[in-house]
Length: 457
Image (cartoon, rainbow, N blue to C red; front, side, top):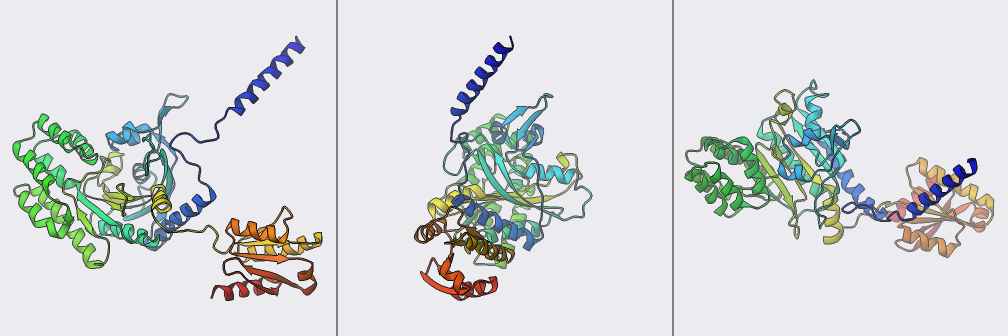
C-alpha cells in the first residue's frame, strides 16, 4: 500500500509538471507586460505627477486594489458597472477590482480623513481594471495618476485642477493639447426643471457620454419630458463647439427661464474667464454644450484633455460635490481629475517623436585582466553609487569590444574601462558612448564625476 501511495504521488507530480508546461507566456487579454523601455516612459510620466503633487501641495495616498462592489455601484454609472471585474470572496461578500480612483478617495475622506482640516488635497498613482474590449487606448489593466481637491466649492478650486492638468502636459512635453469642457450641473438643472428623476438623469448623461444622443432624447421623451425640455437639448446639440467665451451668449439665450442652468453657465464662465486671463497661451477650452462623462457622480464643471491624432481623452475629471456625503460622510464639495498614464504612454510611443531614456547617466563598468581588478572596480562602483550615480558592472567577463557594444545596447551614457594598463597607471578610462570620446581620469569618484560634467558641457 505504501508503494502504491508513492506511485500515485509521482503520477500527480508528473501531471502538475505537464500542466506547468501549458502555462501561456502571454498575460491575460487586455493586460500588458511592461518591458524596460516601457517602464522608462511610465516612470517619466509618473514622476511628472509626483512633481506636481509637491508643487501644488497634494499629499499622496494609496487604497486597496480590491474594494466592495457597492462602492462603485452607487454612483460610478451604468457603463462602469457593466465593465467591472466582480467576484465573491469565501464569505460571499461581493468585491470588485477598482475601475477608477475617485470613489475610493472619497471613501477615505468620508472615513479615515473626515477630521482633517479642509481644503484637503490628495494625489494618487494606481492601477485600475475594466472589462473593456481591448483596442488602442483601452486596456483592461491601466494606470491612472490623479489630483482630488476636497472642501471648496469656489471656482478657484476648479481653476486649480485645470491649471494642474495643463501643467502636467507641459511637463511631459505635450504642448499642443486642447481641453473639452462642459457643465453637468447645467444639463441636470434643465432635466430637474422638467421633473426628470435623478436616476433617469444618470442614464441620460451616460448615453450622452457614449454619443447616443437620439437614445438619450427618446429616454427623456418616454419619461415625460416636456417639449420645451426636448427642444433645449436639441438646440444645445446643434450648437457648434467653440471656445466658451465665443458661445456663452448664445447658450444663455437658449436657457432663458432655466434659472438653475443659467447659474451653472455663470459658474462655467467664471472658471473659463479666470483660466484665460491667467495664461492666454494655455490650451483652448472648447465648450461642448451636451458633453457628459460616464461617471454619474459629477455635479458641475467637467473636462477632458485631447492631443492631436487622438480621439480618446488622455485625462479627464470635474466637480463632484455629493460623493463624500453619499458614502456617509459630511457634505464636502470636491473637484479633481485623473491622468490616463497608460493611454499617454501608448500615445507617446506610437504617435510622437518624444523619447524618454531610463538612465540618462548610467555608467557601465568593464573590468579586464586579473581578478583583483574586479575588486578595485567594485570599490569604484560602490563610491559612485553612494554619490547617486547608477553603475552597472559587467558580471559575465566580456571583452572590451563586446562590453562596449553591450553598454550601447543597454542605453548607458558612459563606460568605465579598468584593465591591467589602467591599474598600473592608477586611472580608469571614461568613454562617452554618445560622442565617442575617451579620457583617462583618476580612480576616485570625484575625478570621474568631474570628467562626466566636462563631457556634458
